Amino acid sequence: MRLHPHLSISLILILSLPLLAGGACIEQEWNPGGFDYEFEVIGACECCYGEWCRQGMLIAFWEPHRVIETVKDPYCSPTASQSLLLSQSSDVGFMDEVFLGGTHADHSNTEGATVFAQVHYLTHPMLDAMIDEFDDMCWESSDNGMEYISETDSEWQGIYGSMWWPEASLFATYPMVETCMADAAAAQFGIPIDALYWCLGAWGTLFNMNGHFNQDEYTTGNVGLAARTIAHMGRRGLLMDAASVYCYAISMPIWIKSYFKLQPIRPNEYPFKIPIGMDPLFWSEGLNRVGLGGDNFAWLLWRLRICCAS
Image 1 (tube, rainbow, N blue to C red):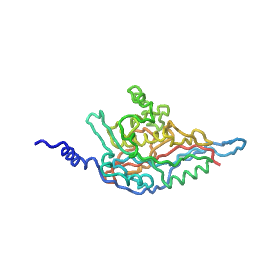
Image 2: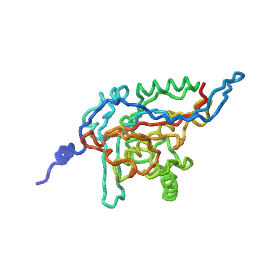
Image 3: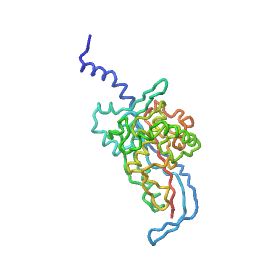
Image 4: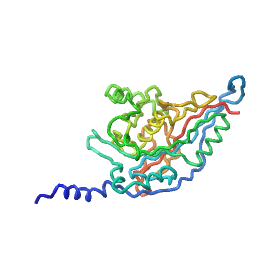
């Protein structure tokens, strides 16, 4: 018996919807405990603004800056974040959510294996309050307060490079990818090579700049997408460099990898910051726990800050 084409498509959708939709979204409010800022006093400093100057102490520390969620279930917020995310999701239909869902295409030889997830780059009231305090201490403005969700970005859903990255075709070539071996080795010691900004150490590569990550292991693919999100925000003009010039913050169109670290907070928490590109063998064990909302991740983004405090 031959089915009508429309009936065949309907039958395929009915059978595949449970697989496409993925697991249920488990939202848990994020109530962070103490933060390890790793303050270091470097020495005395002076900042001049025209004819007026001020003196202070040059300090370096790690600042909790944003929450990045990488989720298989579209519009799911593992940290129960509000604002932009929930306001956008209310207008989305069920079929749209299905086709925005994340996937994991696993292959036995790992060739062509991919992870796809939606990402949310979100502020948090506690983080905003701390950044405001640090801005006052450093006499600078280092935050634009912007948020981003990929479900409304068609370029994130695509397979090929984004308009924000005209150099993507160059750095996605085999010789350029091979240069990332040096970055992968350095990242294991916590010192990723900033000049190789298209490399993500042991996680993979930055390009193509979209939600499809060439990685066979699901947790690694998600942390790689979180790192891509940081770079993506820089190219969109939504990322500030608070460490290169200690008297004021400047825009960072090309990210400096060593200025950022990620800390897993969902579905399970990890107590330490992770340098960009560090091998998951050192930190990923037991992180993706299905009973706690597995496949929907959240990462605390830490940003290096060096300023003249007074």
